[in-house]
Length: 288
Image 1 (cartoon, rainbow, N blue to C red):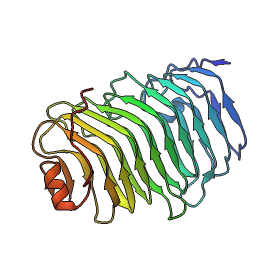
Image 2 (cartoon, rainbow, N blue to C red):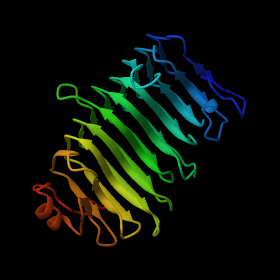
Image 3 (cartoon, helix red, strand yellow):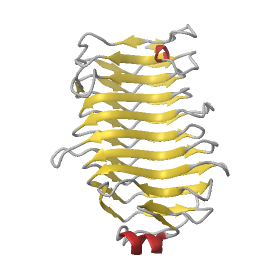
């Protein structure tokens, strides 16, 4: 089924509210004319703590300010069990997917590609989600905007751990502060991701930026090309953010700031000696 919202000021195709649950939206095509940051242009939209167990699968989204905007009520009134998988979104303007105040959301195997040049855009924006969060196998090509993936307060426990795995993220090539992947979480696993950040000569940038507590960062490819010499391929904020960091390939061109944790390090050898992290990691140009 094809949906063509025709307005340039209000472009929602689906509005789910009042406890809309156990719905599946799949195998549809959405074409939107919206080109701004308004939630009125979110193709699929909900703001309801009681919307649970919905599945958005195998759809094509073209345009829109947001592809999907899915929010619970607040940090104590959350949706649960919602799934977003195998969707394709092209040329969104602001954010492909916004997922907020959810328990156990699954955001897996989606393709996010835009050629729009809005410099403060996001590929993926996830905010205050809890427990078994999954962000797996997504392709994000967000060459101009500020964040490839913005994952803020993905809060797990020792037995329910957020998993960010097997994603391919390309971000940057603008002149603002640029993050390939920003992860702020607890007990998270950030593993087997490829993060490529490109930037103009004056950009402030980070390939992978990690905050929170007891997170594991392993088997990732982090590549930062260009940008200001004063910013980093890998940045750890806070003394308790990392439980383990190892078996990564971290590569940066330009300048002498390689990574940061309670101070700056110029290269992998200095990082290994100064932090004790990444003893089995490498710093090799992957040539792609």
